[in-house]
Image (cartoon, rainbow, N blue to C red; front, top):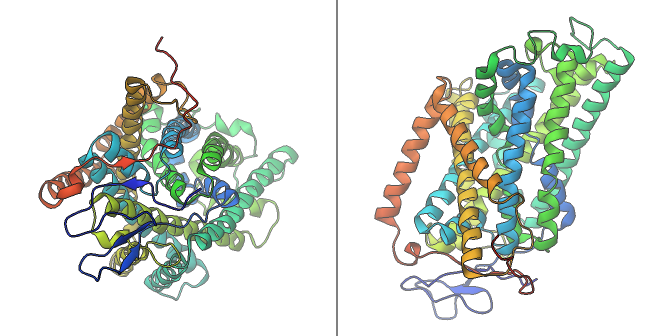
Length: 505
């Protein structure tokens, strides 16, 4: 696999077009001065498989699942299954495009190619916005977890320390990032499996779960107001939290530009999404609500701690705290990676300053890492000024940004499929299933989630902030983007020419 970035575009005024050796001349420098503009393909199968497994386990599960349960009761299991099915369709759409066009700009460049340059600009910057505010939420959660062990230390100190630590590691090479995510994910996956096995043992052998007021058993799912104790409205309200929990899973598509063999790795990773949803969310929360009545979960400390305590493990709180710290570190690490690579793609399209398209000798877009570090420093200020209100505020805004990006991925995929049929292009090597019905239904579902944000007072601010953000992006595109930034992205099609599109039925 060549290590050249596959996105191309006309060179802006004063800049030499990309050379065949994968470098581009720097404006204003001598004729011989060049700046590297290609990323290193340093992510192997092991890295991406565990990134796929670990991307579903983060602060949304450990920090947000209790509030989702309080909204919907046991019916939250249906919310996670429905939301998970929608996310799977998003990832299959993204996977099909990533295998066809394995570029680091990923869905930002796909939107520019198939929906137009403005769509690419809005999609890319909205994802950067999403990653920035999610990262602030994640470092905030990290500081809360560290406060369990070191209550006398100010939270903002932990935020500052972890920002510089992860930024330094992300500047080394993409392989370092991949190794970090491998070990972080391994710890998280092992912990979740231990929780499920431990909870099942409590149910089967009749142990008394720590802090439980009733006997554990599957009957707890229906004996405290039924499966829908808060009605259908409670189920709808929970989608705001449920979709936030899945946020960030699209980062997997960004790895295509740095995967050693994207045609093999990306499909395998994407197809694990249903298993991840069933294992990490449905089965885990099903076990929790079998151990404890749904209306008691989260009221007597962490329910995950209670599982370990029920097994007679005295160090349960410390074990879980180590796990959730790992989850937070992994989340911030992925946030920095994902936003940086999208910014790299935006710079290549003329939608961000050209300096973001430069990479270090290690193949890392270093200035994007520096920018994310600067954004995260805002989290230091927020934690110092309004520590109690940070997480809930930005989590709801992140949900809007996440769902918007997913909707744009689906829209880009629809446009691509229509172009394949219209032009008789080779059929995709990793086609999205149940086309087109599943894609249309998923887009409708995403619109429903955005509507739900506006229907409930607690999350309505996210809709206001999101609308203002999109409006500002449209204005920025109109007044700031010029030259090749107004041209659709040109992406190399790496699909095998042996396959043909089947005739329309």
